[in-house]
Amino acid sequence: MNDTRKTDEGTAADSEPSVGFTDEERAAMKERSGELKAAARRGPRAAAAAGESDVLAKIAEMEQPDREVAERLHAIITASAPALTPKLWYGMPAYAKDGKVLCFFQPARKFKTRYATLGFNDTAKLDDGTMWPTAYGLTTLTADDEAKIGALVKKAAG
Image 1 (cartoon, rainbow, N blue to C red):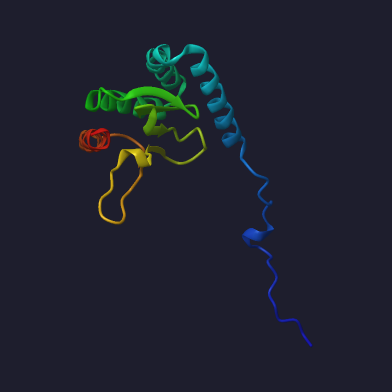
Image 2 (tube, helix red, strand yellow):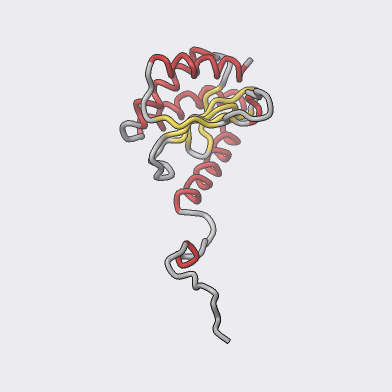
């Protein structure tokens, strides 16, 4: 009897098996651990004040075009929802409400992706029917994009 099954040659099965987290993911987890330790040392009042400077320093470290997008997002988010607290979250600029991250900016370079991402966590409550976006890919920001983001952030922080 001939075996007529095809082999997996040339398929994704031939690529290296998953070994867990990527280097970038491990680095993000280490950053998060450091953020939690720093916040515990600072205390709650100092953490809020340090959050803004931490976020601005992280943005300054970014390469272009991520830095330009992150600077504009920071300005839009802080203007649209001044009650949100800037903080680092897994090494990314994030904005929290009542201590919970509402939205965050993931630079393209952080995980070696082709575009940056503005993401919203479930606390944002951007629900719209039975399906809605929770993340937006960004390459640049137009004036129209900035207006849409401002409205989204206001709704999310609402």
